[in-house]
Amino acid sequence: MVSESGGGAFVLLYILSVILIALPIMLAEVFIGRHGKQNPVASLRYLSNESSCFDVTEIDADLKRVKTKKQKYSNSDDYTNWQLVGWAGIIAGILILSFYSVIAGWTMSYILKAGSGAFNLIDLDGSKQIFTNLVSDPEKLLAWHTIFMFITCYIVSQGVKGGLEKAVKFLIPGLFLLLIGLAVYSSTLDGFSDGIKYMFVPDLSKITSGVVLSAIGMAFFSLSIGMGSLMIYGSYLSDDASIAEVTTLVAFADTFVAILAGIIIFPIVFTYNLDPSTAGPGLIFETLPIAFGAMPGGDIIATLFFILLFFAAITSSISLIEPAISFMIENYSISRGEASIKMGMLTWLVGLGTILSFNLIADYKLFGMNFFSLLDALTSKVMLPLGGLMMAIFVGYIVKKNIVMDELRFSSIVFNFWLLLIRYVAPIAVTLIFAHGLLS
Image (cartoon, rainbow, N blue to C red):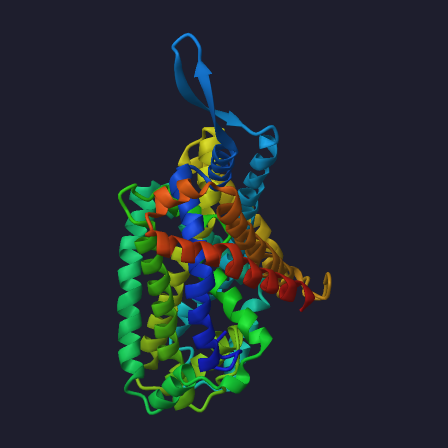
């Protein structure tokens, strides 16, 4: 996204988007999960029902005292419709993982290619040919997609302590070590200063409405806003933990890792006179291998780089499928292992459409998009922004203020500032993203 949107200008807008828009909604989503202590659908239903009650004071003639009881509004059934937001988040997570798993499979394939020396002294044509050979072969894509989904489902099947926590305790420190090691290496390259300038010196002339909205959208996608993952992690959060501290730390760490990745990539791009404006798969799977092939010890560096991408992918995939797993367990009284198999199979099946959209059915399009592009647009431009908007409205206007204040434990000044962001700033920004996504 940085390479596509003008370098430092995008980084600046991204950081502002995280602080002023994504983080306030992130707080709201974690709050829903912690207060509801259930899957996204059940938590939203619980909170909407709780907020549809009001206190009724009446005189008990027999006891001769005033008593207070809870009574529901007559239209309280309308409030339970908010659980549809939870449903939308679960579905969005499954749809995203279905194509995310295919792309993660590319990463696994490139680990082996890098380790085997396939990038040694490779030129642009050779690099493009390797990538083309991969995505045009449905059998290879199917194999890697299957392996990645199996690893994901195995981890989540082991439970919160045995699977999720154990995997993250290993993967996240490993990710940081790889990042730091590669960042140190990048700092020794001739193009380091140019790469740093590209990332951190904003060219304000490149700021357009499209770049602003892209930065906001990227903040949503990066922090998993609107897909139910944050509600699930909120439901596992201890009552003693501060929601504000936890979410702020997560947002900071996520942004730090993204910036560190840029510090690794762009010095390599500038050192080997590559085009920094090459976006998406072209930058990672076609351009960077040329640099890796030209540098001393490039096989090792490239292998570590794609291992790093795999670590990042597997931790994200766990978050994407966990809301659906929790919903299955809580609503159908099945084991975590059975839920993991069923949701994993469903996700795997949907992923077949993405695999085929790169080869056998590449020419079949709807609204000018193939299956993969359609899923990507549906989730990133419609479902996630709409989910974030609904979260902001729900917590900002529907949930009772005293319930939110009790959970967030803010001072009155901080709470009112957050309320301003969640009621006005975030909804307006998300509406603009939504409109831009539908019109673009």
